[in-house]
Length: 380
Image (cartoon, rainbow, N blue to C red; front, side):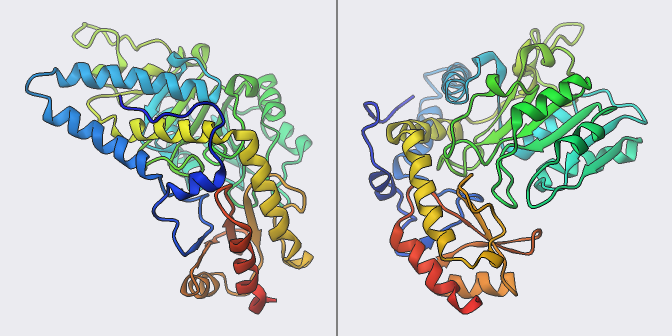
C-alpha cells in the first residue's frame, strides 16, 4: 500500500488546503457533510484499484486485498484509540449503525432510546424495528443539550441507547463517557454516532467506553466516500450475531455451523474493494501531519470569528467553542443556501433547527469567514 511521506507535525492547515483541488475560489463550509479530498488521497485510492486489477493475473487479488484490509484496519484503529480486532471496515456511518441494529435478537417490548438530535443514520434503523414491536423512545433535548436526569430516566429499561458524540444539528459535544456510564448502569448497549469527530477532535473509543462507535472518513478527515468504520468492544461483540453474513465474517466459511469471528471482524461480509480505505489512510496521515490539537485550535479561532459576527439572537450553536459546526437562524434557509451559493459561499440548510449550518475546518481561512459574514448581512 503506497503512502505519502509525512514526518511528524510537518504540515500547516494552509498547506493541507493547497493539496485539495476542490477548494478553489469558493468559500466552502460544508465539511460536516463532505470534506473534499487532497489529490494524493484520490491518487492512493486509484492506485490501489489499478494495482489490484492490472496485477491480478500474476498476483493473487484476494491475498492482496486481505493484506490491505489488515493494514488499513490497523491504521484506523490507531487513529481512534482501538485495537485492530475491534474495527470493522464499512461503507459509512449509516452502514455501521445498521449492522449493529441487525445483529441484536430483538423481542417485542424491547426499548431503544435515541435523542431528537440524531441524523437519519441514527433514526431509520430503529424506526424499522418498530415493525417488530420494539419501542423507540425519543429523548427531547434543549438547544443541543441532554438533561442527564431525563436521560437516566429514559434509559432505565432500555436495551440499546444511540446518541451522537457531536450533534450535526447544533455542533454541541455530548458528554459521551458520562452518558455511556449511565446506560451501562441500566444494562443497555451503547452505540455512538461519531461521524463528526474524526479529523476535528481527538478520539479515544476506549476512553469513551461505548459498546460500539460508528463513523466514516469522508467529512473532517477529508477521505473518500465509502471509507466507513465500526468499532465494537470485543466483549460486546460476542453477543452480536449479524444477519448479513459472509466468508469474511466467520472463522470457517465451509463449516457445518456458523461461527462468527471474534471482535468486530464478524461484521465484514464478502468481497469489497479496499480503495476508499486506502485513500482514508492517506487522509489520516495528513491529519496527523498537521496535528489534531493544531486543527482543533485553528477551528476554534475561526468559529470564534464567525460567531462574533452573528447577532446573539441568530446564533443557534453555543457561543463558546465546541466544534466547527455553527448553526445560524435565517428566515428562509433553502433560499439563503441558494443565494450564498450564487456568491460562491457554500453552506447547507438543516431540517431542525430551522436554519443554515456552516462547517468550519482548519483549512478554512479568515477571509472566507468574512465572506460568509458579509453574505449573511442581508439576513439580519
